[in-house]
Image (tube, rainbow over the protein chains, first blue to last red):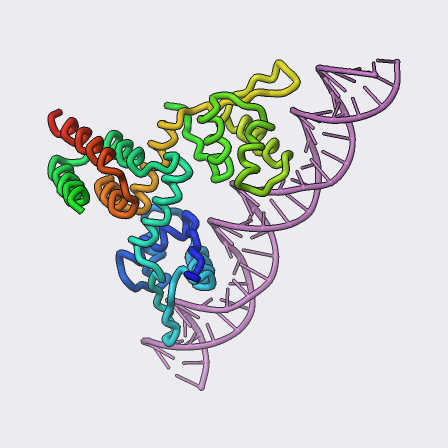
Length: 126
Length: 126
DNA sequence: TTAAAAATACGATAAATTTCGTAATCAGCT
DNA sequence: AGCTGATTACGAAATTTATCGTATTTTTAA
C-alpha cells in the first residue's frame, strides 16, 4: 500500500517551489523569497511549514535552533500527480487534449518545439 | 478592464464538467451525474449551484419552477486559465516542461502523437 | 551574566469552502 | 380545494486553509 498522496494547497505549493529550488532552506529563507511577491507575516510562513511537516509534505532537521527544511517529494512526482488530476477534471481524461491546448495557448520557441518532436519520435519507436 | 476571472473551486469544477457536457441541465440532472462517483446530498449540489450563480460562474433560466443552468464560460477558456496557473506554479513558467511531462507520464496512442506532430509542424511554419 | 535579537510553538481568529436540515413555494392530481 | 411530491431558498454548522499575536526558547554579543 503506497503512502497516500497528499495534495498540497496553493500556499504549500509556493513553499515547495522554493524548497525544490534551494534543496534545503530555513523558514526565513523561504519567507524572504515569498515576501518578494507576496504580503504575509513571518509567522504565517512558519506555521504553514510546521503544518506541512505534520502532513509529511516536508522533512526537517531540528537539531539546531534554526530548523532546516526540505521537500519530502520531488517536483516531478508532484507535477505528475497534479497533472493527472487536471487531465481528469478538466480535459476529459485526455492528455493529448491538454498538450494541444498548452501548445496552442502558450508559445514555445522553435527549439523547444524541436525538443518535443524528438521526444514524440522517441515515444513512437517504443 | 476585462471582467475579472473567477477561479472555480474543485466542487464547482465538477459541476461545470457536467454542464459543459450537457450544455444545459437542472440541479437534479447535475446531481444525478455527480452522485455516481460522489457522496453528497441533493441540497449540497443545489447550494453550490446557487453560489455559482451568484459568482457568475453559471447562468440560469428561472422562468419555470425547475431552474435550468448552463456554464457561463467555455471549457476552453477555463482550461486556458488553469493551465496557465499550473505552468506558473509548478513548471517554472515553461509550457514545454509541462508538455514533456504530460507526454512522458500519460501514454498517448500513435494516432494522437501524429496529431500533436501535425500541430507542431503547423506552429513551426508560422 | 544579562539584555537584545531571532527562532519556534501554539492557540485563536478569519476567511473560504462544503455540507446539510428545514421551511417555503409550486405543480400536478384526485 | 386540498394533498403529495419535487423544487428552491436560506441559514447554520462543519471543514479546510490562511493569517497572525503572544509566549517561550535559544543564541549572540556587550
